[in-house]
Length: 395
Image (cartoon, rainbow, N blue to C red; front, side):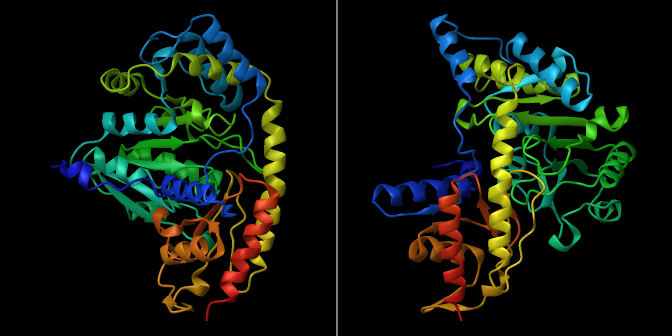
């Protein structure tokens, strides 16, 4: 009855974990939840006020499909101010969230026979969205011991005449890693030489710790010509539910994305666009406050996980996730159950230890778990204690 396309898809595992977590909490069970990929801060007041004003001003009708000009101008100003990049309105599109922008881009750029390199660990939605565009995701393995870097020699092993693009997510979800400047430069040079596109997902750009973000598009005009930056207000301004993303890139690609958007969702929500305008053009102090709190949680969580015997944990440079290596328990037994995968470990942690995490296999890395520290210190302390107890109970 269903199309092969629909039948091949499974729901987002991160959203599925969050849904199960909420269901258990509704039953009165005390769950230490590390699943959510969204800030636990409230949207700043001036942003909410801009939305309320838009409603009161009856700014509630259709807008241009690709976004209102004042918001595009604010996005252009953001790229100029933060990244030293110059764009025109026709090189900007506003979408119904960052994921929507990526989906439209993949539909506009890829087709059957194309190969798209996706470094692992990867955000869970990249491979399915590439497959929905009838292209083939090619998984490039990176390693914790190498700081999750892509060197030119490593990348060359995965390049073929069919390579259409590489997806770069930095800071990354789920690891929080960033790329060394010299490696970004080498990737850009290969893209120019071999003629593939650079899809640069920079949505965690502002959420960095002792690090200054550098966009690959800003490093060389030739790189910029082959780069599409995918971004949004969700993570930076605690606006996940407002559903506003934006992309910048070559005008023909942006136009194609707009055509696809015009036949699917049409314009992003009018009220949310006004809120995003206030976010990008208003006071930015909120970001520093949020990042400072995230850093405290990150430092505590990394130290606590590393204190568990046999567990290693990469110290993220950005985003709000840790990605600890729990291979120490793979193959061990818990009660009458073999811990044969990160999925099994996740189920045990949720069912028996009331701790919600996401299995690393969903991000292309077996034996790991993703924990979001976009939650309270109380939850973090309680959750780590439960994870330590679970690891100790396996033999």
